[in-house]
Length: 201
Ligand SMILES: Nc1ncnc2c1ncn2[C@@H]1O[C@H](COP(=O)(O)OP(=O)(O)OP(=O)(O)O)[C@@H](O)[C@H]1O
Ligand SMILES: Cc1cn([C@H]2C[C@H](O)[C@@H](COP(=O)(O)O)O2)c(=O)[nH]c1=O
Image (cartoon, rainbow, N blue to C red; front, side, top):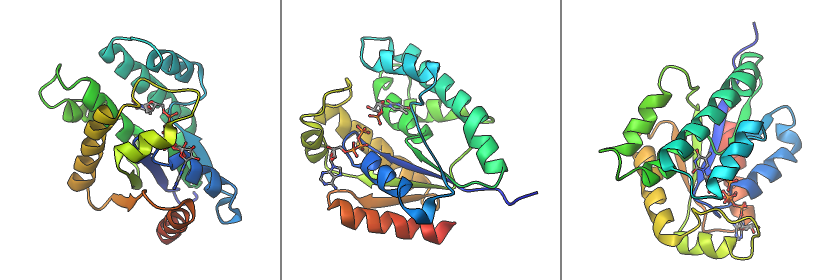
């Protein structure tokens, strides 16, 4: 049986630069045998998620759409890839839920972040490493400025809360999180990320 692959996730607030780096990793021959994926996925459940995040959907209903998309992602792509020995890089994964829906549901549950983590227990695949792109929300929102497909989450005050949730997650699991300064050039960040991944796999 081949060795199990590693799961690496890229996380951060909107505009932190994850997708730019994910694209550059995907075109780097060093990672040509990796599986590149993302959440929300391109499945029909991911399409439903996209409808939710562009509308005034109930926040709990929205959470469960994200969770359903994650369940499909884990069983159809993540687990089979890891079990066949492939390394996987996902642009957003479960920590996006803990950080974002931890914010949207903060008035409905005492510790919403923990409550959302708990509903993933027993079936999700926990990443071997999460690279957190940490950035000032003012800069991130400015970067998203002229982008066409805006979500309802791209607001500085909301993203400040999402950022603190991400930093809390990193603080609680220091051995599986690396926080990088995403207020730098694409080249500097890219070179850090390549180094981090190469030392893990
Ligand atoms: N290091 C950087 N410096 C300046 N601009 C950047 C940097 N990284 C990305 N950008 C630009 O910022 C915008 C957002 O980048 P990107 O789409 O990679 O962010 P993201 O974290 O994937 O956002 P989202 O999660 O909202 O999709 C893009 O226009 C991109 O070209
Ligand atoms: C997976 C996931 C995503 N979100 C949010 C974060 C973004 O605002 C959008 C879509 O992501 P993209 O990277 O900009 O395409 O959805 C979320 O709130 N919860 C999640 O679990």
